[in-house]
Amino acid sequence: MERRYAAAAVTVIVVIAAAAYLSRITETGVETSITTNATGTTLLANVHVTKPVYGNASLMLPALDESGEGVVTRLKVESAAGEGRTLVNINQLLFWTDTQFSIQTAKYVAENYTGYDLSDADIIYTISSTAELIEGPSAGAALTVTTVAALRNGTLNPGVMITGTIEPNGTIGQVGGIVEKSRAAKAAGATLFLVPEGQSVEQSYELKRTCRPMGPVTYCTTDYVPVAADASEQAGIRVVEVSDIAEALKYFLV
Image (cartoon, rainbow, N blue to C red):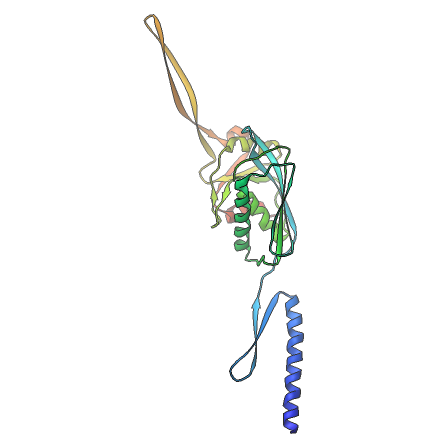
């Protein structure tokens, strides 16, 4: 009888100690599952869950407005304890539909890149601009860079800007208006502009009209001549090509 009481007392002590341990380690980001095997032995299985360091980050983003002119908008991303939501706060800006997908992809890539569990985190995206409408998915790379920085509560180099789409595997895709965006980045004070691979020199076509006299009439032909525009030379800013988000972050994180 005394042995049974002693065994019961030991069991109670073990359960209390396990509960205290569970309470302590849950606060440090380690989840513990309690199971019982076939012999009735209680097992503690620790599962490490990496949580983000909640914070915020801002980045200036070059884009094209509704008339095709280069403009710069301000992008801010905040991460906070929440319910795994993706929230967008837009200030005096008509939201462009294809960027909704870019935001979702940026969050997905940032989660995979950092290895953080965002199921208990809310990510808030704030986009401010003086333009009424900004079109195109070219904010994808910038959205991803800023999301990674916000999850780490890191600081982004204010002298660097980027353009490019973002793919689920972290690849940065090509966009248009490189020269216009380069000029906008330069005007906003950037010293380095990151562009997708193969786009530091932009290929365009120029209308060329040639005329020559043929007897009493003048014969004219119109052709589209390819013209290569080096973004760095055109805008007076250093332009560097990057292929994926890991490469881009090397220039941003300080």
